[in-house]
View: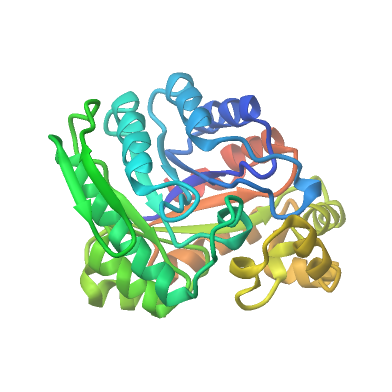
Length: 318
C-alpha cells in the first residue's frame, strides 16, 4: 500500500499560504508533506521563495498530525551544516515524531548567492556526506568539535534537542547519489519513477528504509487550462540533463525554458481533471518501489486540487 503526501512549493506560494495549505492538506487526508527549500524560485513568474525554517515553525502550530520533511535542504554551501543541525533539531522539538530532515546536493540557483564556488558533482556528494556526519555529531548532544576537509566546528553544543532522533532522508537523481543515500541516509527521496535508483539505494544499505517519490501534476477544471498553467508556471519541468543543478539564476532558467513547448510539459506532467490519470501516475511511482508518494500541484489553485484529491484520488489508496 502506498501512502500519499503533499508537496509544499516555496517557489510558488507566500509563507502564510503555505501554512494554510499544510493545514488544508491535513484536513483533506494527506498524511505527510515535503516542503522545498529555495533562495530563488526557478523562474520569476513563480514569484516566491520564503525562508523555509520560518514557514516550518508556522506549520508546526497549524497542524496536529501531518508529518513534515524538507524536500530538500542543501546543508553544504549557503547554510553551514551546524546551522541546519540546529534548525532541524528545533523543528523536531516543535513537531515531536512528525519531522524529518531531507537533504541533497543542491542547485547552483540557490547556493551561489554568497559568492562561493559551485563545485563539480563528485565534490558536492563528498560535501553532503561530511555535512550529514556533522549534523549527526551535533545531534548527539554535548560539546562537539569537528575538523574535516570541508567543515570546521569548534566546541558547539545544541541545547534544544528532540526526545526522539530526527530521521535524515537523502535525495538522489543518479546512481552515485543513490548509493550515497543508501550508505548515510535513513531513507530516500526521488523525483522520478526509476526502479534502478531504488535498487542501487537498497543494495548500498537502504533495504527496509522509507522511499519518498515526488510526482508532479497540474489539476485544473479542464486539460487545456492545466497544460497552459503548467507551461507558464513550471516550464523547468521538461528541461533535460543537469541544467537544473547548473544554471545560476531564474533569468537563465527562463532563457532555457523558451525551448520548452506546452506539449513537452504535458508529456512530463499529468495535466487535467481526470482522476484515473492522477491515480495511474501515483501507481507508476509505487510500481517503481516507492512506498510514499507526495504530489506537487503546479499553480495557484491548491484548494481546488486538495478538494479533488480528497474526493477522487485519496480514497483509492486507503
